[in-house]
Length: 355
Image 1 (cartoon, one colour):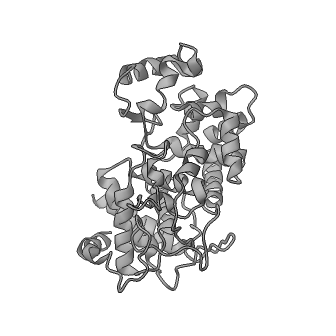
Image 2 (tube, helix red, strand yellow):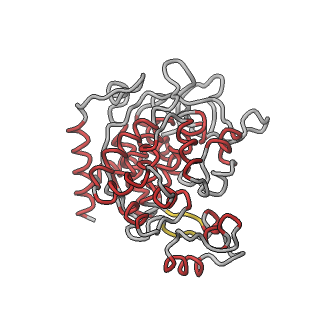
């Protein structure tokens, strides 16, 4: 435990040292909360770190929330909104890509409660998602980058757009490129951001077609490594439990590294949308996969740039939207005080003092 504390402390020191660096994009800035909530990164870091001690999957889950939020109506935390009784909001959580799939919402609410205690009505849920994604990558061995901040939260959700914009795991390369192009992201962004599958898990239902009836051919996907195919068929039998999970990266499943790309070279990409990046004949993505497989620094640099670019998809800024007091609900028309973080005081104080 001592060495783990030392690692966390070293990372937080690095954050302080790098705090003076300045980058900006559009109306977002890494210094947005320097005066109003200077400790926000440390607070988010602490909650995610504590969650990771009991849940090694949480990092991948949190970065996925950020991705699934930004691809719908911009990085505005619309994904976090619950459906309302009057039907004015139909939650994106019920979309095809999110239903019984997204996780980590409880951790996001813990982060929000802690942030509200330290800086009431100041930090948006959209920014919390962006910071949590960066912290998740860092905690699992990936790169650090200065997160651009200043997003505000939406008061609407769009389940229809979620169904249309979030690429499913069976997309072809051309379909993936189109889905990313709609968001202003190019081919390099596609390959870089797909590298987030270097950690986390996937359910059998997301790749079962590859194992038995690929593209309705009646046979397995020929691009899937035959040895791994046999293992996956044992794990995911036909008509079995589709919610059974397995590692996206069969070699280093809980480490953020470049092994995702070396797996693709060996036909060990779990999802069709993964393997398409390398196995599509004549694909321009092949050379990028090869580069990232042999040069982790190149992957990290490109991943960082693409995450910053993705985080700048149609953010609400200035007087747009609102700063939600609870990430699952639009603020009431009037409110007397902010109390979301009060119950978090004791555990948060213990957490910060233990780092």
